[in-house]
Length: 407
Image (cartoon, rainbow, N blue to C red; front, side):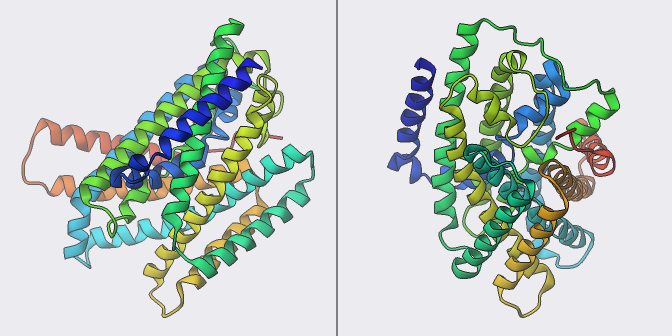
């Protein structure tokens, strides 16, 4: 009972703070919310069972490595906001412009994949709560929800999206911190060992790295700041990338650490979409309900955001005199296909590859701009080296990432 009270109490207090008018009225916070909503919408509900099932007691090392890599990619995005955008405004032709166009195509496809993931995961959580175990029914429900999103996108377009995201991310942050407070209390009270649990199977180092690469999607979202130039200054967008990643990394690392004792007491036998809800429910009964509210708040808004973002990108790229709503329909259509031909874990892997391709092109743009700089220094050489390493890792994700074993 005490753990339930802690979870609910902390959730309420954090919610009051986040909905304070000074917080909501802060331009920098509003700029940060869009990438943050995408990051925690992408991964918080799925990252713990994914990492614990694949890496066991080394899960904390896995999320730390993913976070460092993602922060390096965030540095590339920040660099391109400052350095590539002015070049793109001046030069409508040339290698930078062509690379940026290719990057936007890859991102548009990745958005469609992520929409399928968000809604499939949301339906899985809802069905788990009401006790429905039927894959076909789940796919039909996801299809119905996608059609509803299609209707919303056609009817409302992008209007009011930022307000939806602000509301949703505030709810989810409050719930996450409430969950973390309850988990910390449980871990201290139970005295269970922290790093002693095993993965669900024995994997080679190569297999583990390939599956870790397939989880890249759970860290993405910060790149949305690239497309907020009409609303926010360069400085605000650069800070939005940094702040959203700082918050998300802190939450991810803390969450993985605090769930280590729980997955020792309640080991993962079979990985599925709702493993985290089922496991945490054995510790604190109110947590699955809080996670369901979090899923509702984040997955729906993230799906709507990526539908509108992907549709807007396609409209810019195709340049036909068609309504933006037509491009929203294309994003939804691709998501519908994925829902019926792949499961959540396969979709995560596909999305990771799609976003990896986008990041790879952004790294290439940054490397070209760095090489063009006339000055030569140790710092420039170090940046080129780091960029080259990140490019190599992204090629690995695109070519060799695989989904985690699942039921």
